[in-house]
Image 1 (tube, rainbow, N blue to C red):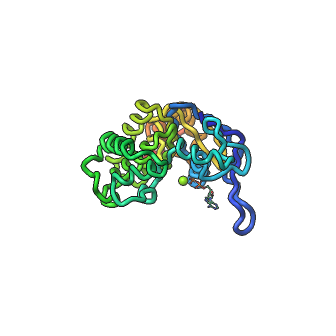
Image 2 (tube, rainbow, N blue to C red):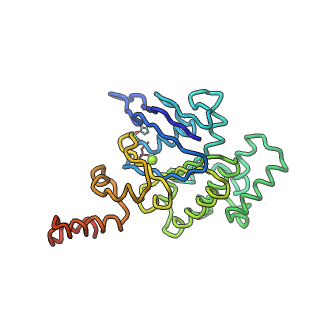
Image 3 (cartoon, rainbow, N blue to C red):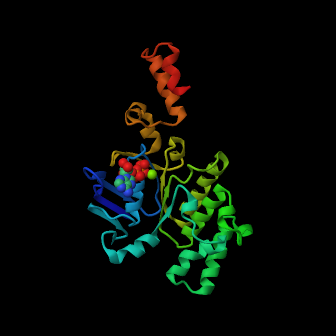
Length: 270
Ligand SMILES: Nc1ncnc2c1ncn2[C@@H]1O[C@H](COP(=O)(O)OP(=O)(O)O)[C@@H](O)[C@H]1O
Ligand SMILES: [Mg+2]
């Protein structure tokens, strides 16, 4: 279980005052849970993701991963192994010259012995449909394949949790769609808890629980359909809801007589 208590994170001042990015977050993510996180640009999503796997240490409060404390230097390696990260742009994450070496990279660093490493690499190539690219240079893969490779390399380390930081934002529509069955598979088959960060309200509907981050605070935590039912609250913090919720919202307003037939009233949904 990941347990975050009263988490504050502040970037040191460059000029002027320091920037308080995370503002007293309390959050628990259970083993095997599948959670989405949405918030406006600059609300602190990436900073929270980085705090979860110890890339950043809290300036207040604490982050515990299965009891390991990210503020303790001795716990950091194990936290980073348990909490895998898949970033927005897989190109920034990929470090090796071939697909198979990329998957082996983290295992080599852990000192996993040779035969076991090969077994895991083969398993990941198969599982993520990358066998035919085994000796290919990663940068020649398509965006969707590269994202699959990033996930395969993370999964090779047997993480208990994976944070996906807007992994779909550089993908075309077809590759985007393919991401969700893959995440569901690692969630269901390997019981990996997933935190999926996105700007797309539609994408959050793939997850059982949705968190809304606004100015460094979690302002909503619940079932996506219930959160999106409150369209006005979401609009207030500058977030869209999935199209069907928005259409319902305006139809309801119309039937309540609160909306005239002025076409400009419908502009938000056109
Ligand atoms: N290295 C940094 N130094 C100072 N401020 C930063 C740094 N990284 C991010 N920030 C600021 O922290 C805030 C939150 O950033 P971030 O976590 O990346 O938000 P999000 O991922 O939700 O867009 C933003 O206001 C951003 O400008
Ligand atoms: Mg971000």
